[in-house]
Image (cartoon, helix red, strand yellow):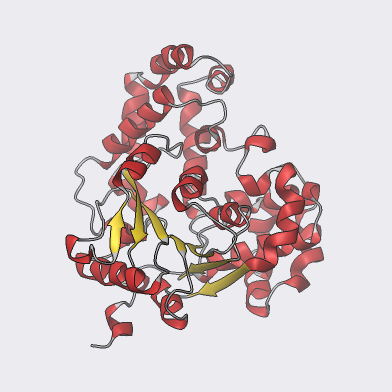
Length: 375
């Protein structure tokens, strides 16, 4: 078996790759920024997903960012965002994405469609309904979350109660108020059911994404993580929980970095540093000379690999990335790290990882890891 066969993505053979699965990124950009420690001479490799964290890392002004995703729908979404940033002013940009109200999204899209590659243009020309409704809500997971917010939360909380979650107040006062709301037995039962393994696999994620999950009570795990975030972290500026519970961002100045008006002109000047690749991570590593990439945002990709493939990918990263560089990744439901066998290639930065994970505003994840390339 050759190296390319050894590293071939397993989950790509088990999931359909013809839809946007994530129209937003649910991994805290601040952990990446602080964990990867980006410098001007860095060449960053990043899982694309919806592109939010690709653009957050771009704002740190590395030399380049290569965004890779095996799902062409995800790279098509980022390509559209890049074209929109290039052509549109900020007001039209946030209207096109659905972040702000608008009735002319298809007309705005018409202004950027010729900036897209033929494949991406064709992809979006067959999805006018998604554009018209607002792209930020078009992902499979986002639609699932929106249904929870729209159909179930009003059963427990009136709008004025929910709005109080995000009022600026001392953490102790926030905790006292929120505990009374999320501790309602009916709310807990609903939350655990809706975000349990069976329903999530059927409607929110994909059964293949649970193949290596041994967690018995997935809904209970998510409920405990949610309670911890609501009681231990400031909700006032937590746009991850804000969108999860309300389906919107009230203040764009504290929204994901690429949506903030104060960052928009800088993004326009930087977007040519982004390179897109549709395919497997391993293909990108193999296509570049050793040491080309210095930093890598790997999302939670190890969640979906067998232990054997994990080992092979970690080894490839350790050999291909620049000595002194770093990789960062999350564990959701499956504990995954590089093995002791690879300590000559990868050194876990355990203290930094634990410190950053304690600050994670995107509350889903079991762990956050930063590892340094040896050599």
